[in-house]
Amino acid sequence: MSKNVTVWWDLPTIRSNNEPQDPAGLSHTKVSFSADLGSTFVPLADVPSTDLPQEVFIPDLVDGDYIIRLAIVDILDLVGGNVDTPFKVDSSVPGLVQNVFVEFS
Image 1 (tube, rainbow, N blue to C red):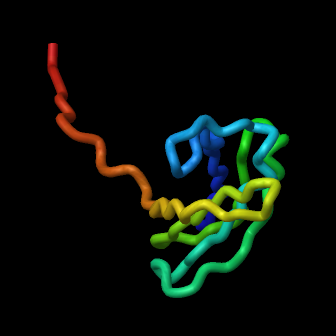
Image 2 (cartoon, one colour; image 1 turned 135 degrees about the vertical axis):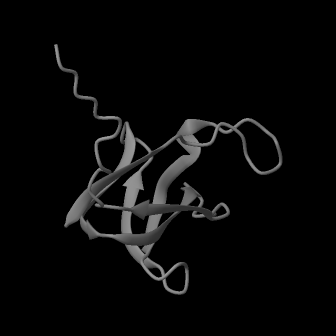
């Protein structure tokens, strides 16, 4: 069984030097995806910083462990550090009903 996944994030409010980040100075967020626990990342999208909410949709993921990688790019084409977030797709069925009681009256 597969699942659809939507990933959301917030844009940075400060630069790496701790100065305030002007939102108009941001270009886009580079979004990449790994299905082999970080050995290989495949580009998914460049999400413009003007798009709100900041999100990407990943359809039809089968059970397994994944990593989504995000990096912000400013209007000077400077790229911030990668933010890697692991997640798991698990389509297992619910457990068994517990504590079943039968009462006679």
